[in-house]
Image (tube, rainbow, N blue to C red; front, side, top):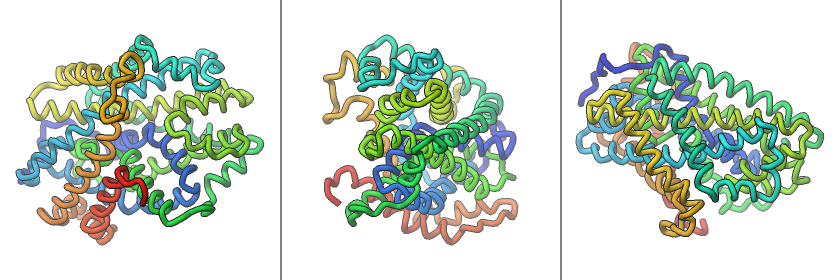
Length: 456
């Protein structure tokens, strides 16, 4: 095993720099729109409690494993798995494909966010309100979605080109505090609106009405699945960022801080969206279960109904754009790191290669809603297919095999030694062992089979 970290590899200059960058990766579109509608769909407080339990157990174990692998090997995801055990080199290749598949379509959605940001900032938020025709008309064309997609890719690439310290770390130190402040400000505004208290109660208080065993199992599966979106797990990101982490920094403590950042933003996003939509709809919970359309169709109508909604809408989409960028930066950095390490190419040429590949693959998702809207893969449009294959198939497989590797091939001591480096304590050692050996593999199987099971 090669466990010597390359001295030539650039890394984060401080513990807070690593935490903010990793938290920025974790905080993304999944926190802003996916977490709130899942909470609304699965009994409010029931989902919140379930998610929190999994975050501090299941999520903690997987995140500390991935970061420890990265820091111990000092390599990106392909090299890291090969360094642990050459027989698991194919797992590194599979893990490397995940961010390569997600990055292009994520940037397409990021382009949609930029479009709505420009609409609200320019004072034209009223155009986005209505029956959803504005959104469908926008994505149904080619020119504008391509332009905003390209701009989003360019902004992401500009940060990655600057490197870890000057780019990712510095931008994270600026964007993450701003993101937190904006989230708190909008959350306070929305929960203090007239009638919002009922929405807050719906969001926070567990609702067991009609809660069968089947729905409880689906809630558990949804909460576990959300952890992948929320914590950037099984994407190679945490392994890559772990390879940039300083040896003297507390690994366990850093993971706890990342979890707090990520969960707090998701929780506050729920306080923004659920009460607002609840008031707007007159308590109709179906409007909260709209999935992705919640952000691009329902929320513009909510802002239109608010006093000062144009301003709140503009601030909200600034928030969403920041969240999308922090995640796209980590996705692109992971892909760039893999290519740099694998082919011994410098950062700038690597970034240019990734930009070309990202645009080429991303255009499939752009055109999949316009001139190629009749073309599908197994019944999925391009964006939906890429999302399904990466999130529902590849990521659970990567996480499951990682648990098998650490638990039954090299042993959990491999990770524990890295966590306790420099006489650091591993307070949750027993929890980590139980989760990685027994609970996490079962959870992965549940996530993997759930999409294919119509009745649980």
